[in-house]
Image (cartoon, rainbow, N blue to C red):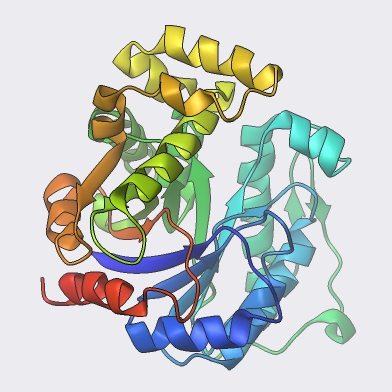
Length: 339
């Protein structure tokens, strides 16, 4: 099992020092999210200031960018990182596509499948000199002249991961992708009874096996030692869980555990802007399903015991600041290394 670092927020100014610290601590990979900035730009700096870590978007929103634009971004980062880049894509939800990015919400499953297929068609054209000829419901690509074609890569093309929560997107991940980003709002029951069976259906439908798919996820942890108290980390985790449970997109996890009433209450509170009151709705029993508690050094063994066979790459859903608690992060990374 690999231990990664996921940056929910990032600053281009801080990236060089942060990346150097992360690689020195020993993280296997670095993921950037599309939150307060573009997820691709910081990875250019990350490639420049690291040598070993894999670097990926976790995730970039797919539909505001054309497949060819995504193909170019990934190709350039793959070349500059010497093959360490992973293209992680997600749909986001309807409101963000329409109201934040200004793009239509159209058959997201079909559009995501075509995005993946079209990107690979472009890459095949660049790598092998094949004619670009992709035709789908949303994309028709048939023009790629030498002037607009980058040179082939000396490494394999970037792996493609997609974010998946519900049945059909999980099956698409299994059939079409190299990996899947599973949402932090998960439980072992959800992974075993819902996510993996649907991933397996997708894999089987395309003649693939579990070994062909990397399962990655952020996980909620509550460190009990360090520069901040366990109560501080618990409050942070409860806040995040309450936010995600208020969102209809993640109701499959809620319904599996019978927490519909709590989710409905949280949705109402979110609409009223009662953000500071929402964590109180998360019971200790819910917290135990979502989060692991232990010292930084103990957490790796707890993570492996909980997720063995279910996840291949994990990252703690916690902020990372270079120079702050480095020794604790190092203790947890060493725990994964010594397994």
